[in-house]
Figure 1 (tube, one colour):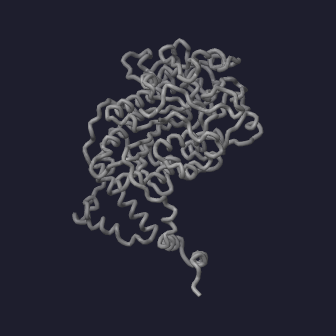
Figure 2: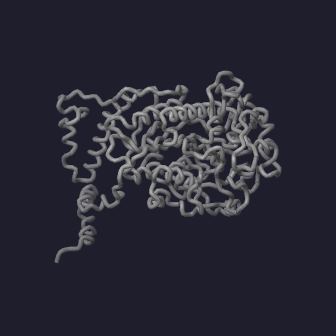
Length: 511
């Protein structure tokens, strides 16, 4: 009597090495069964651009109450001015006049951007513009009080230890949770990588991976099946991104299409591990050939900063998306800038100075100038390319920072690790000029999620220092972006395993 297939596989484990077992599974198509069903390539182009603010960005100084500057939002005691002024941490209200904004959904209540988010209004003449024009055009939105969550959680539940994320307030763990959208354990793949796993077929057969990182190999871009390409930022030219030299026989030069080396890569790929190595090598060679071309001309001058150089390189890659041998329809980019761990010297002696001089604008001031000018240049370039509606840029960060200062005095005052913070979403498809977010689980609070800036208040943890409990999860934020990008609804649960714990899986900030 012949053995059943199930029994054969069960007994085979004892007699096969790991590699051989994988090869056998591949021949039975069990590995291939785990890969998504083939779908047709997309006819349109879309890209997601993630900007990671490494270190934990102080959202309390990025989006500041204007009408409620003195008291906590909602009219109670404490508040932005009462808690931060005196230590040197508060941005003076007089510096906020030119960046005052009235979101379309706050019932006329005004807020303000940090002055360095629109540095053209600062005390240094001739500064390039920042984010205010994009907000006014309705193409920039603010997601309020977003962070890593296992489930919606109230202050009382936090006090009881119910529903807290894994290793809360730890840099490494919270970075991981922002990148993986997995808050209850250690995530092994990033949500950008998992989105690529499920949407790779939208690209068809292309030379470049869907995920490209400008900040080294990133967890965000790591998938199960899909690969990422880590490249250098500008001023490195595209032709020099993947330089592969060859000193052997010319007929075996892997840079030459149809070479003997490339032919060998197609042999003996029945073994799963051999096939994986061969596919990786082939894709690297194909990517090298695809990028080996002159840089395209850009219409916009980018700032020569870390983030400006990364976004400039992304702009070049988007412009060559339809070049011969590339023809990309979906791309996910990752870039990062550090320095946001502002325990000291957050504001300096002049928080509204956009010149980036540490003694005057402080660490955060210079960083926000870099962020705003780089994002504005990228937005302008996408508009010049006619790609504004096809590219959505968004920010992530480890966590927010305490409303209560740590230390006092210029050069010394800073903030400590907190939880919920604010994020920016930018692009032609963004329903901007508005705040987005969820109310507290108890049903109270502002409908757009902005926290009550009250120590020991309803949004604070039991530290009583202004560590805002997020009202919107990174899962909801990411799922909204992925939905716009083209992730099928049937794959949403696989990409965002904890999303079902939130009543509203997506938010309405994208058209």
